Amino acid sequence: MTTTITLTGAGGQIGYALLFRIAAGDLLGPDEKVRLRLLEIPQGLGAAEGAALELQDGAFGLLEHVEVTDDPAVGFDGADLALLVGARPRGPGMERGDLLAANAGIFGPQGAAIAAHAAEGVRVTVVGNPANTNALIAAASADGVPAERFSALTRLDENRARAQLAQTLAVPVDTIRRLPIWGNHSATQFPDVSYATVGGQPVDAALEAIVGDVPTWLAETFIPRVAKRGAEIIQVRGSSSVASAANATIEHVRDWVRGTEDWTSAGVVSHGEYGVPEGLISSFPVRSVDGGWQIVEGLEVSDWARARIDASVAELVEEREAVRSLGLL
Ligand code: NAX
Image 1: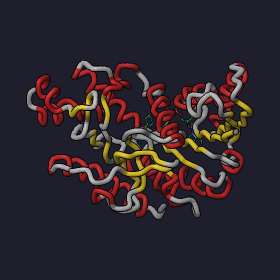
Image 2 (image 1 turned 180 degrees about the vertical axis):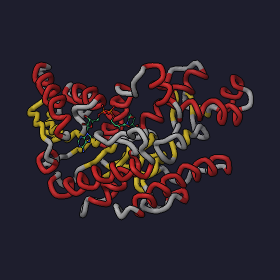
Image 3 (image 1 turned 30 degrees about the horizontal axis):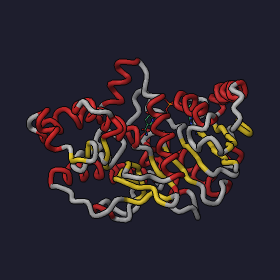
Image 4 (image 1 turned 90 degrees about the vertical axis):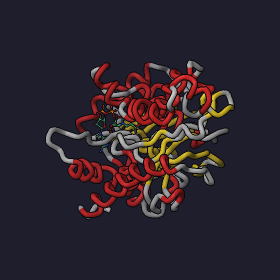
């Protein structure tokens, strides 16, 4: 079998980190051939073409074909998986409304091109920020493609949260499970340790023994550290997260395609679950079953957690209203 994968922003940093892992089989396994379509804007074509030359030099047995284009009709042609990484960054003096509008101008037409040209059953992962609202705009513009086929990346946030908790508890990171992100991929996101387990046991007692007052630690240390990790990386590294973002993207798409044993996090369309207004793309605890995301339902949500979820969801509502008021949704 061959899977056609479209990557937008393929000439950018995350694109460069993603391409070689996809070609090496990290996304779909060692038996699935891939056909890559690299979609860029004209200024990014040279970098994408250069990456395509390097892909050729990688002599990857799984890589059947690479096409570089700035035409969305060609870029999304036959796409089984679309990774929407290219986005307009916030420029100097740009207000949030300007940023939303600039990105609506990218993700609206891309959603329409996906509807017109992608394979039936296409699954679209939005990485480019503001990821949740960009996914909402793309889904709204993709006539005939169910909104459930669009999701936004919050796996990097979850991975950051699991890594921080593992470090605090001095345990291997893969022993930490069930630590979902709720809400927006932004500073208001809520990494929720309420259900977290370490080695299959609730973390509460172990955490209390180490940090003392857990609610204070969560509010003053853990949540801000996770939510501001992107800024910390920029400060230390001098440039934004790249390889960790690519890694999270690989994990997100791989789980979506292959299924999950346990929960993870993804920005998916709400049908009103946990009081999140219908139609918003918000991060939830999810499972992947039969190729689709399913929101984990029936969880008890404390008042404390409720307030955090509501604050992040309120930001998503504001973003949606801002885009609507510009006539872009
Ligand atoms: P770069 O600026 O290195 O690359 C972006 C690329 O997108 C550029 O080559 C640009 O030419 C291209 N592009 C712009 N408009 C396009 C369009 N209409 N069609 C196709 N390509 C287009 O950014 P990079 O570091 O790769 O980050 C990409 C996006 O990921 C940014 O929006 C960034 O904010 C976002 N991130 C999202 C994360 C998440 O967890 N959801 C984490 C990492 C990252 O911050």
